[in-house]
Image (cartoon, rainbow, N blue to C red; front, side, top):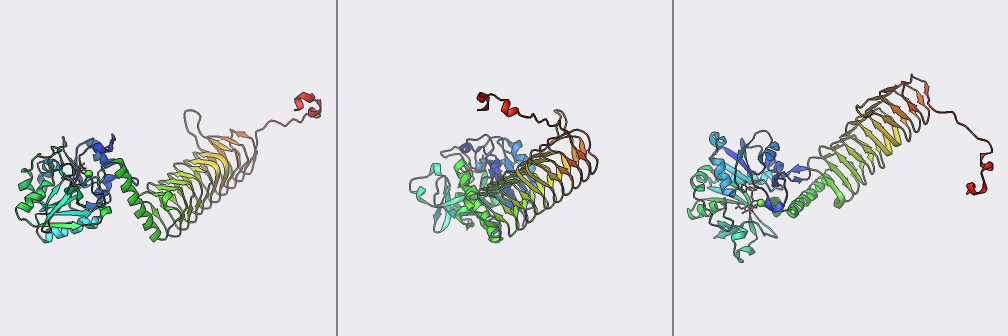
Length: 457
Ligand code: UD1
Ligand code: CA
């Protein structure tokens, strides 16, 4: 039997009070809708019902997910009618349709799979995922009769008694397509919200004595996001779960309450993540690194045995055993070969830094190529920008750049050359040469004695 997957993502998310469509809010670095897509991506056909700011949502769809536009958002039932009547859906040849909301990022693929398996095996009219939830407010409550599910009552339509029910609707269903087609047009808007509720199909199935499947799962996996505080709650839940997974994989996490690791970040065993550290984007940290405290790493690859303390790295590749910080800022396109040191108040950008090279303190290295074993001393910078264009600095192997040097690019410092402290270097320096640009020092004898007593103070 064929199963098609559908994500409902047309709603504005009014309760979020945000311009961004709800399903695009980030949960640990990924838009909420990415989690839904991940859970059903193995299905043959996949649709996403889009509406509010649809062009933004469509941008986040992975290949294989087809969008269907619901121009006006008149409720979850209306979203499904729109899908079934759309041109895009004409080609659909499935027997069952899995429907999930776009705002339940904690959902688990295995739960969806078991919903599908059980619905298909029993040839049910519909299957539904429910959960007992500590604070059920806002969810549709499951009304059971003789153990089976009789109907769902939305919060807005519920009586005080019904509000005491803790079993709630996850919004995830597996419908027999024929049942769906035959009955969806019978739904009305006779409810508090004047919407077409998809949930009303449950009562229709019950009244017609049709088989339904209930898959009950754990509370955390069905939490919906309707407000900023629910977004935060869901993100915390996922954060705790991921941090535990990293620890199970042999990563030490010193203080989970101040550690933020995005979904998809890879950390190899033996690494230690110290307090107050953010590791985000497509970041990979290899074995036996020490990262933090007080460090932010985004979209970077950190080679094994590196140490990074109180620093910010974004779009960086460390090939291995680097020593970074405290207080270093490594920006996009910094590629460090092994055993490189970048120390306090040093910044690098769009630069290749050779094996064993050192930028120990107070320096700027931008648009530069440093070969092996270059020493780039305190107070020195590459002057890469002339106000219009960026130029490169090329520093060959074993060169020694003294303190407080301006290397005005484009410029090349030859292999083994030395640059005297305080120089403004505008011409290439040949290999093994001393490049120096400095006024002669003057010493004025007896100067201090000639000063008046008043000046002396
Ligand atoms: C819905 C369920 C509720 C369930 C809860 C689980 C209904 C009537 N209620 O309530 O029983 O407990 O989810 O999280 O279904 N959407 C559209 N088009 C629309 C309206 C909504 O695509 O016209 C999408 C939204 O973008 C969202 C999803 O459907 O992703 C659910 O809509 P939402 O308004 O959040 O429903 P809830 O009030 O949470
Ligand atoms: Ca919701």
